[in-house]
Image (cartoon, rainbow, N blue to C red; front, side):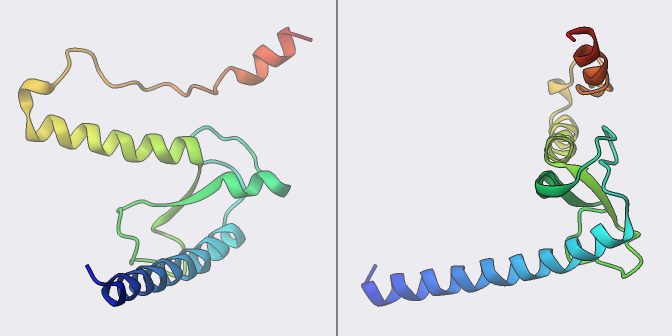
Length: 123
């Protein structure tokens, strides 16, 4: 690939990343104004510098559907957000390959549910 094509590709990718970041910051700011700063799954509260760990999850997985009332959004911490998307991938795999299904049901617990109690016990 020539240098001009490489430079053009880098410019296009940079523009796309910038547009994506602007779009995300727009709906993220709106979501942070609409909802309490609490993860919708593990119920951890976020404030100050920790607020950056709170992400906007699109309930229907369509990042272009951003109604102003926030009905397609929920705030999730980065860990629960990652789990939510991993869960979707795992479900799709079991649909694509039924022989890949495990006999046990998927995890339904919160890994942070008893964390506060553990800290109290260690004091």
